[in-house]
Amino acid sequence: MTRHAAVSAVLAHPSVKKNPKHWRDWREGRIPPDWQLISWVANENMLSRDDADHTRLRKLVSKAFTPRRVERLRERITALVRSLLDDMAASGGEVELKEALARPVPMTVTADLFGVAEPEDRAELARLIGLIMNQDTPPEVAGRTHLEVQAYLAGLVSAKRDEPGDDLTTALIQARSEDEDRLSESELVWTLILIIGAGFETTMNLIVNAVRALLTHPDQLRMVRSGEYSWDDVIEETLRWETSIQNVPLRYAAEDLEIEGVRIGAGEAILVGYGSAGRDPDRYGGTAHLFDITRADKTHLSFSHGPHYCLGANLARLELGIVLPMLFERFPRLSLAGGELEDLPSIVSGGVTALPVLLNQDEPAGAPAAG
Image (cartoon, rainbow, N blue to C red; front, side, top):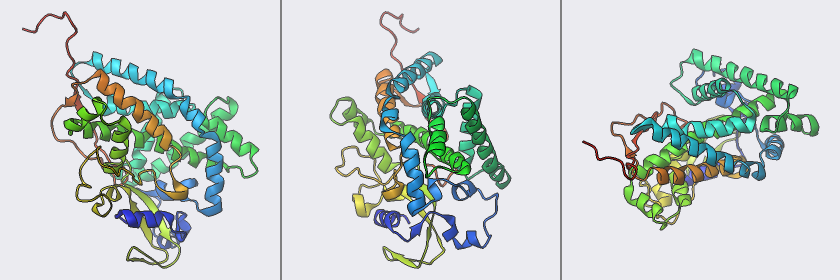
C-alpha cells in the first residue's frame, strides 16, 4: 500500500493484523529462518501482536516509557550535543555528520535510557540494530543476527536483575515481575529490541534527513533562522517528506478484503509504505514531492496511526528539537561537502549512508588573515 488514504485505511482496519499466524506463507513454512526480514516477523513484541495481546504489551511498556522520563533527558541531550559540536569544531573544516553527530546522539540517549553503560556494549548494540535494518545483509548473517541480538539483550536483562538501575530495562523487568499481565521473558527481550531499534536507527536517519533537506533548501533554512517558521515546522515536514522509516514489514489480511479498490486475499502479506504516503499528491497536491516548511498540511503517518502509534515519537521530536537549532547556531555557514550521496541499502530505512559537510567556520575575531 502506497497511497495516503490506503495506508490510513490499512492501519485502522480491524481485519488487518500484525501477528504472522495470519500469513499463509508463514503458516505453511515457506519463510526460511535466514530471510533478511526475519527479525521483523519472528518476534514477540508489540510489532507482531494484535488486539488484547497488543494492548497488554503496550500498557506495560507505557508504564516505563513515561513523558516525565523523556523530559528528564532534555538537559542530558543538550549537554551531549554541545560536546559533540565542540568535537566537530576541533576536527577541522570537514566532517561526516552522520558519524560525528546524528549517530552518537540517539545511540547515547538510547543507551542511557536502557542502562547500557560501556562504550563497547553501545557499539555492539548499534552494530546489531544496523544489521537488522540493512536488507543487503547476506542470509547467513541475517539468521545469525536474529539470534545474536536476542542473546545480547538477554544478557543485559540478566545483568540488570543482578544490579538494578534507574533505567527502562530495570523498569520493564519490574513490570514483568509485578503486573498480573506481565511480560514473558521472551517478550521482555523482544520489547527491548523493538524500542532500542526504533529509538536509535530511526532518529539517527531523521536527523540526517532534516539537515540534508535544509542544506539543499537554503531559502527555507533562512526562514527558520529568521524566526518566520519554527524548527517544529522543519521536523514535521521532514517526517512527511523524507521519513526515516519508509516501509514497515509486515501486516496480514485475516480475511478477504478490499481497501481503496485493492483486493487483498486472506493470508496475504501487506507492505505499508509510509514514505510514499507522505508524498501522495492526492493528499498534498502537486507539490507533494517538494520539501516545503511553509505548506499548511504537514500532517503525516510517519509514527504510524491508531493502536500501533509510536511510543517514542515525543523522544524523537525532543532530540531533533535540540540538535537542529544548536547545529545551525554553532555552524551558520554549514554546507554540503559535495559528491554523490548513497542511499541506504534498505527497504525499511530512509536516508543516506553518510553526509559529509563543510563547517565553514568563521575565523575568531583578531585572527591573522590567511596568506
